[in-house]
Image 1 (cartoon, rainbow, N blue to C red):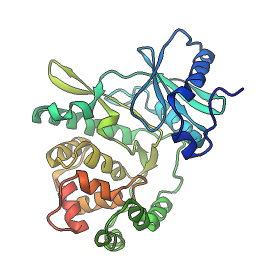
Image 2 (image 1 turned 60 degrees about the vertical axis):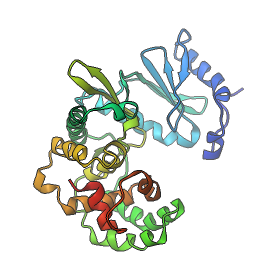
Image 3 (image 1 turned 90 degrees about the horizontal axis):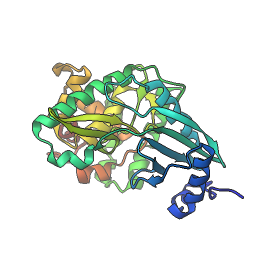
Length: 308
């Protein structure tokens, strides 16, 4: 008798309840010799993630997401102790009853998203400095064997799908009509692919308050990691961390290693191009949560969101 329910499609997986997963989690903990631990599911996350006692975290990968297991485990191994902020330490990984799992250490702190409204300008500057330094180190870390195998080919495929992806998301025609021309005009260059998190956002960053203020204490959730252009990473930072706060974004970039002269209009346009080319791009939603541009054009949008 299987412990985990069938989840061969995304719809089947999303329909699963915690009660349906409970027997599988209990059986897996027994297999791992952790029957003395209590597993409590976290509220957030696209995949089921459980606190196992006070010091471990169990992340599950249903069959429909099993291909992401190797990426998460491989990146955790590659980053172990390398960044200036902690990342989870891999304990064990494998498959059980058709599902994949990663057992890893639990990081200290609380989500940056929860404390962001209470941070002072000085707090944000300190966090931005730490984040920029951490991303620079991340991008210098040798990547494990993860895709895409050919970055230019990946971008070409994303470019071909860009308009339709935004149309499905509900983007207005006045914006859709601008996308092909904008992407054709922006020179993305030929940067060497590096290891990318791809979803750096407040929910994936942990912080703690110390005697000197708030400090980053963790970066997690690496199953969407990939190899690609460094600036592809900045989409998440600009939108999901800075949220339109250009002073914060600028501090991240300077700490990363950019010079003020490099943060020009072309840089902003490249960032917006990568925003449109990103796998999870949803411009209609960004337009609701990010500052409005002075004009309804992609060039104006690039300057409002990414010009520093």
